[in-house]
Length: 233
Length: 233
Image (cartoon, rainbow over all chains, first blue to last red; front, side, top):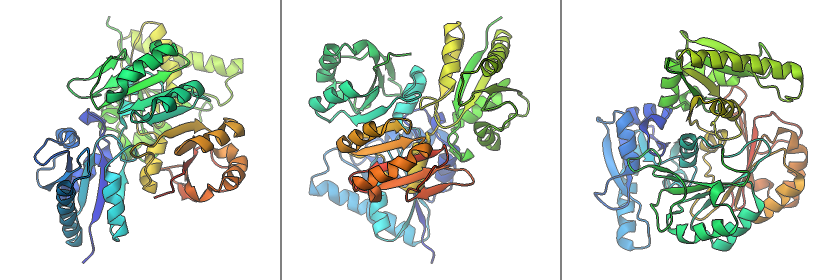
């Protein structure tokens, strides 16, 4: 029997209308939907977005646990169980689609699943989604880069020294997953006189969306800073 | 009379199915579609993409010239003419939507129009699109950044020295509009032993799409290099 195809599908970062025509099409045709969750039974933001724009009623749903700290055996076992279900579905010729927050190529857990499947000889495909920094920039009506400018994308888990030398050298800097780093990012931006050149995107497209001046103290995981050395628009 | 709203709409970089649900919706409801062209009467790639997925038959179409070298008076006059038509349409309460290749926040001409309109007191909105580097990465099934990695986006017009020092310092580098720079980029990547860590995306989603090993000599304007120092997937 011909094996099924696995699709990693980016669903954008909050607004279901940010989903692409292709993403909706693939999700509505899939036999099995893989839903990434942080804990068994926890709600999946990616699925909550997708279900508002795509009819997936007919598909079988399989939860897949991606814990924030993936070191414990118990959690690895949970993930392996879900992998077994994916193998079974693909072997039975079914189409399997995994919903993924934002874009599949930007800090995505789907890459992990796709690589394992590929190594095991399965056919995989990727459907691009709007990354959170693009939907944030759109809402804020800021450009990320223009003409000869560069854009640096870095995660907030990076060191203060690394951010500092980046601020020195580049035009536009995006710091993603900046929530925990805000306590040292704000003083750093202040010391470089860049606080007024910075806009914060938080929970873009979601209920508690915030787009504006950077806020002090620990913030949501979905916090991105855009620093434009040439000034905000 | 209430003035109309101007929408800058990203339509993705080639495949019409990469358009978002919102982009299609806005384009189908707009009274006036602004079509960016390089020369009067020349075909617009952004419009060619949009028209395959959105029904814009009823809308008035206005061409807007964005020459590659925008210094001559003649061309500036052509652009000003189109701006006048936009003002008139918005003053008459019409919805105006400008189609834009890729995403509106990444090296986009729409930013220019939007800023002028904003300065003149008009309401503007941005609809995000899939940037070419995301659709290229999806087709190539490569991640742009994972975990603690950074991603540097830079245009090919930048200097060789600047690219070289970036290659030294960062994990993942995207060089966009790399067509003319290929003649010095290939030897540079070779000298750093990074040619096998590099994939070229060209004309993604278009007829003459190429995704693979970097090609030597001058290439199409829509050429992007992804260099992954940790290795391609």
